[in-house]
Length: 385
Image (tube, rainbow, N blue to C red; front, side, top):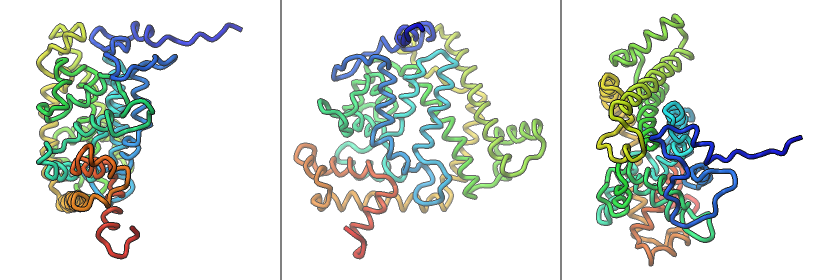
């Protein structure tokens, strides 16, 4: 019997990747040097470190638009992240990009979100106004560089520079001191652009799914939206009239499939038309290369306008949003007023980092459920301390 010879993945990538993909061997490395792993590439190690992080596990009990307790079936940050990763890997594989790098970026893209979705983020941004504000990508970078602590010799996860860069470049605050250095390398890698496109694609489709399931909107209302109506017609052409159990999932499956095909086709055309033949070309190109076609962007603009008007501004969503934001602000204010109420490991950080920053780290790390429990412990007289 012949001896098993393991695949050298760094060499194996060379025959698989397109010229504009980033091979693992061209990574800029990590801040803290580590010995190469015998059978995992640097980006595979990044992926595994993200999956095993505390921040990633907490995504299971953090919600997005439909915050606080609605039911057990709507999406959480974790399920959304897994859906984004699935789409991103498909796009990366078909375009010849580094699938491991794309997967790691997609898995990390929501690590910095606080409890209660965008309501929690807005509340913390207001609370931290005097300290530069709060934004989830900046906080995600802080998590992977400082707040996670699984290793004995350095803080954070010691991710590759490409992973840190992808988190930083997604920030809406490019002028922030911690973000600016990551902008110097040029435009985002195609692998990062893929993860961003997959996020938007998954977000829209799955907000429809959750909103329908929770009764926030009806199928009849959605027939006003062109892309939904076209997907319904395609379902009926293929399968005839379906029952409610299969109808919704099949319409959404077609919608997602159409969008993935469109992004692949349009991006391939852009790469060819703009003569993108290397990572350097990607870095230097002034626009986003991974995107939907103009026709689909028009359809998605209509869909997103519908979601804004009928879902995000729905009175039930607004009630949950206001309640979540109020809860975050009151937790922040109470811990700043009385930092001795913080767990001891957070109290020890105050001298070095300041009260507001430590309280922000603590509150931002909470799940929705833990934040609600902390609120009860602090403000309800008959709750256990």
